[in-house]
Image 1 (cartoon, rainbow, N blue to C red):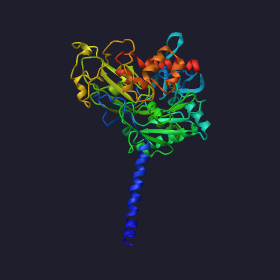
Image 2 (cartoon, rainbow, N blue to C red; image 1 turned 90 degrees about the horizontal axis):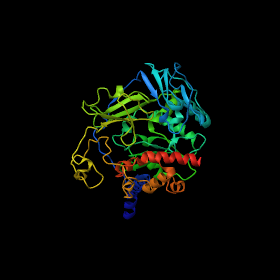
Image 3 (cartoon, rainbow, N blue to C red; image 1 turned 135 degrees about the vertical axis):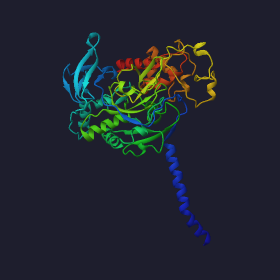
Length: 473
């Protein structure tokens, strides 16, 4: 009797242990460890300090930032507009509007050769006046609302890495809730006061697909772990663990004929604001980062805004040229000091241009202040050391070498060197068999960084995807 008593006394303990064990198994099942990749250590990460920057007196919207569209103008110079007013539409999908992030007056429409629209310049109001939109009830009404309000342009699709085709139903929607790019913003800080709008955006997106909405997290304790109506997966490891393409590849790979949509966390918030408030509020948080920034921090602004008010007083006083990048240093677009943010940018990076740097034996001299993926530099012994990078190419372009360099930093189940060669040859059958429908230019950014041949891999991928699309569709 005594033995039986002891057994029943220990039974709750056994049950607790079993429960913990099952929880660990479930957590491990939803965790993906990325082994291949590279974290680029750079000085100048943004401090968790947020400042608000009002829209500049002049805003510029560049249709070239929306890849794969043919713009057709809806406004003329001198017209008064509201935030959310359509500026142009996509000739291939006439319901797809592109709208103004601010209210004001269209001061100029800049055209290039053959009257191609290069930019729309807007004299912005000091206080934004928003255009009101009626709420949507069904999935089709929601799709029409997003197309009309210009927020459909926030949704991208794979294959081809373009704005999603509203006529195609995705098998899933993927959202990466963390970023591992150099000096990338911390979404735990950026999104901490926006989770209600984020949830509203998720609820809206769920009406657009019969599949699942996948969130990629970097921790079980993430603020995104409590979002409802989604499936979460934890990704650990170096960059590009935060790339949505890697997450798609590991969770639900894309086959020929399938479509997957992707959207950034802050863009989900913008969709949520449309649902809850009936307005197009393009306000987003942007991180000012880089080794040449005196006060790296966060700023609240709108896409298309001038960076002049953001960088003013926050850049170190130096006697050499600087490079300003709208985005991160691997995939961002080069802009000038008084340039304008690209529509989806969440980061501004500032580094030395490198044009006035002259070194003995150039890039080939082993040094203590240079980073290298190879074992050539002694700095390989200090993996956590941060470096002051500049914008030099550090080498000359040459023929592609099959050296397995790409494989070391490319975690997707794809042969990157073979795929690049097939893209250069525009061999469609080979590209399809090697997984071209899964990739986007950003997936090859690290390969471009470590490439000793100095090939413009992202440009190669972009051209190949465009050629493939024109041939297949």
